[in-house]
Image (cartoon, rainbow, N blue to C red; front, side):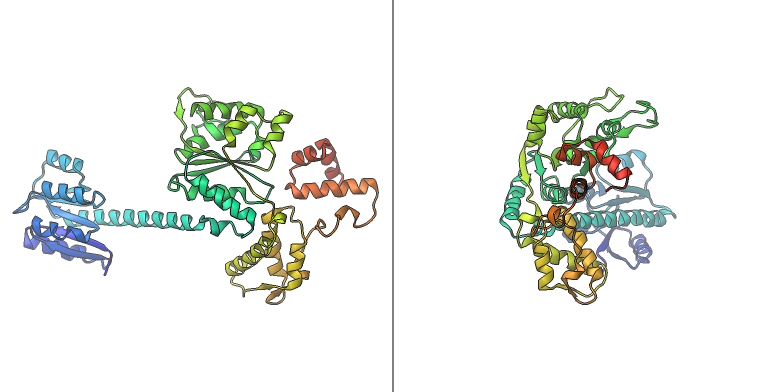
Length: 448
């Protein structure tokens, strides 16, 4: 039986049968007819999807029946069908919660048909949205996104549990590739804000001259190229969550702007005077030590304390012991499933090779390594030869693998750090305390 139930409340037997026949032409509809308001109300607990209601009934007025339906469940659409054309009556019924109002004539059945079609489409869309929300919820259950049984990961689970209980600001720290963005989503989608927007901004990916507009929006004509009003990410987030990734890359000008917004809980779009309230929860992430950046003068101390909140520091993969193998097997299974491949296992030598590797790119690197290993394997068992690693392993010092000149060692060091920090030249220059122009020159000259 169809789950789209239509109840027709109509005291005229002939007209009621005509409506029932016409609506029942759609095989997806389940249609029932009632001749009195009392009979219908005795069946209201069966939760119809839609009600078509005759305004003039022999026992109860259509208005009273409408009020009882709205009181029982205001989400049940009610289409009023009346024998009289009275604008004031129609307006009053719509105010009381009626979905639509039609006067009985030759076109009524077709108008009801079209109205039912719109209601069905709306209900289907709402179900799809609810289903997607449930899917997102399942997707971001802690155990579904953060795999591991190591003490470090169990501590992360405990901190996430604390984070979702309130709207406290959360700062997520850890090396590149440890999954800071996934932790931010896990917090949002398991909190009371799960049904509200989750808006992410990668600070390092936005040019300095555009970041203020991106975060806070701008008015038309605020600057060259501002041809329309733009809603910023903070405004877009509303009462949801805003995730500021790579916050350590923000320059001093924007740090001052952000601090004011967080303190005042309001902002002005670029080029505008309208005051816009800010209610979003703040989650930040960085692979830098912000306390050290404060000492160096690169990050404002007042903003640092404003953003610190509950700190969740993600351990690097090399410190997570057997989580490496657990994650490796998970990535292999997922890749095989997505590509309709037979399940593959890891040989003992392959496992040992993974356990002896430092994973400078952390979980992100392991995922890429295992997906390539699945492709390279010629059997259902992934061997050590199928796993391609870079030179840096725990079993030895990659600089000493072979003798080299000082210049050669310099190239290796810079290349290693570029791989570790996702080719972030500015970051590598700071880590090695060299000029970024030196790195650019070596790249230009194809030395690295």
